Length: 143
Image 1 (cartoon, rainbow, N blue to C red):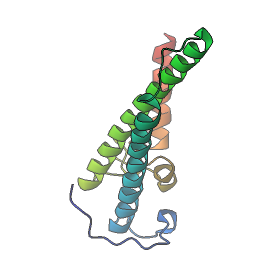
Image 2 (cartoon, one colour):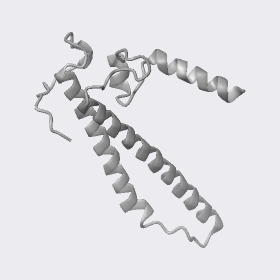
Image 3 (spheres, rainbow, N blue to C red):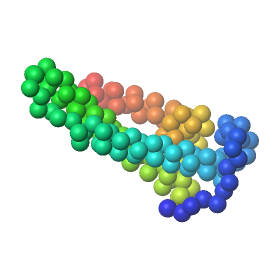
Image 4 (spheres, rainbow, N blue to C red):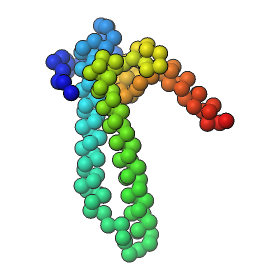
């Protein structure tokens, strides 16, 4: 992945940026936000593997302790799986930044609101398109 040459001002706020949507500074803001988020997730995952999963003994003599340890272990594995999927979404968002497709709804092609992207930088749909998508999923689920 190519390094960006855009310098991000330390006090930059994309919601106050009155320039063009997804200008180079705004893209750099989201690129850094995504990269920091990914680094944090990978660091936490690595720490968990080192600290709890490798050193944990699931074969406890007491049935209650064993059940508790197995439950904790399963929960930790589910959390790691969700984070793995999130890292994949982050990588896809970073790819969209590289391809200048970031910030646009995959369904309508319209810009995704800056507050939505700031809250959920991996978003691929505008809020309206996401709500339509979820309503459609609910209808199909209820059938």
